[in-house]
Amino acid sequence: MLRHWSSHFRSFISPPCANALTRSPKSTSSRSHQPIMAIRREDQSVWERRAPLAPNHVRKLVRQGVKVLVQPSNRRAYPMKSYQNAGALIQEDITDASLIIGVKRVDSIDSLLPDKTYCFFSHTIKAQEANMPLLDMIIEKNIRLIDYEKMVDKNGARVVAFGKWAGVAGMINILHGLGIRLLALGHHSPFMYIGPAHNYRSSSMAKQAFRDAGYEISLGLMPKSMGPLTFVFTGSGNVSQGAQEMFQELPFEYVDPKDLPKVATHGAMNKLYACVVSRGAHYVRKDGGSFDAEEFANHPERYSSTFAQKLSAWH
Image 1 (cartoon, helix red, strand yellow):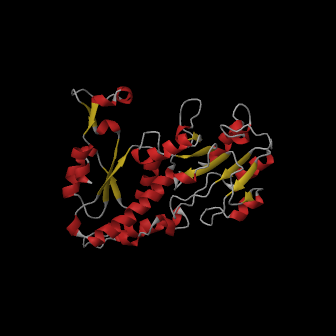
Image 2 (image 1 turned 60 degrees about the vertical axis):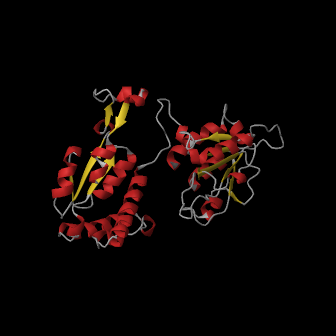
Image 3 (image 1 turned 30 degrees about the vertical axis):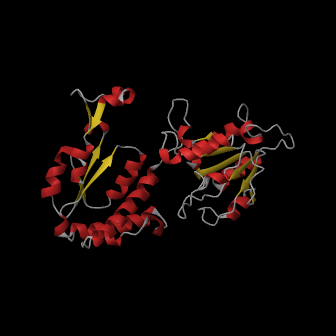
């Protein structure tokens, strides 16, 4: 995200989009011609350590004449001192900034500053019901919203999206949680030795924990009472690739989706089973025809999913 944002941010400090930094949607003030932007403090979760810009990106912006304000936070992956050394001003008050950027949406919609330009993942593009109050407040406060989800290149491809690290972290946490869940159900498993993602300083450390768990699995130390374990990866995008990268540190075998029932009931106990499922594997035409990707994109109502019946029951 940080890498892509740096290049696209240049468009906000040159015509025709310079007004995103130099003035708010309604502002007509000319008290300063220096563009001012701010990096807000993330407040959605105590575990959120991401930042929309790295210190080296801030340094480039400062050199181009942008005044950068950074709200203090000791949770960020980057120390505040690094932003300060890059030329940013560390301060709580960011009302002077016309452009305010973050990663996640604000925790309290009442904290949104009126007549500003905000940039973050709003999770409103698909009309998510839980975030409609956020969208209402954005409209009420005359806020210009730039959503990372809608930033695309000239070919229409998204430039800011989940990378493989979302899959890496997700797979670590899934197996950590699975170990705890199985223990609660009375099964001690090798997954108990896998900690949550934030316990590891690098993916290499996490992979070693996976290998340690995998060694016990390969020795047949999975409890027989729980039967063979199967995993289903949906799609082949960045997140799926990252999750599979971690999964492949364990003893595994990929199978065809149609073979899931067989391995789930009669599979070996010294390895894990997985399959990668595309849309065509579970979406079927309501009239009985074959799956067509282009038609599905334009007319999804013509299709129904068999995921719950054919896949969910076996993983």
